[in-house]
Image (cartoon, rainbow, N blue to C red; front, side, top):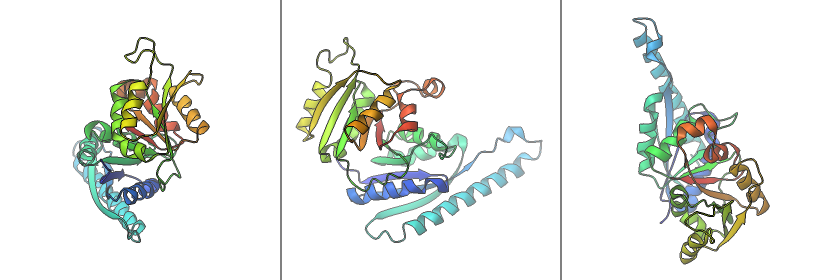
Length: 279
């Protein structure tokens, strides 16, 4: 398996760095980069005076169309000199309620979605909805890239955040091309439960499966000493100089993670290296 169709979506000029990351990965994988420039209508028709709704919605849609066309123009200028890259760009306008279906349909027929972090001071308002649409509606693995990371080189060392969940295993399967190319892969198990299906050999079955795929994998069982799992993973990535984290996404409901926090949300906000997520 290889990443032959790589998808990215942007709704703001501040996200242009993710174009560089997605383009570098597509060129490295000899794949096609599909770019979606979004114009998003945030108008809420029910809040306007009678008779004013039609005018307001029309103005909002026209503004969204201009935003999308402006982004497309920037993308075309940005990639004009990329002679070794196969790419396409399209624009689309959607109301915020229809964003999931629009992004999900494009992601569904892609091998990998590349997006910038969707939390933080520089993240656009709609970035979280785009990330979740790719994961849930599109069923597509998502590579979340921190600022200033261009994915120019293949990962040398990778961490698999292994907790025996279906989501984590799905992420491992989707990340196989990157794991096979890495020099070293660590199956990182943090505070494994004694009653889990792997019992006294946490990560053993996964490591055996990876080895048969040609992945140079080893196991590290760690005690949790950081406040959150994401903090522990980020610290471990720094310790072993990892340049990729592979993990399952949204083991809990999105609502619970939005209100209470969770490993997925925390990692999307704090990740210091690229994170490949799937579910």
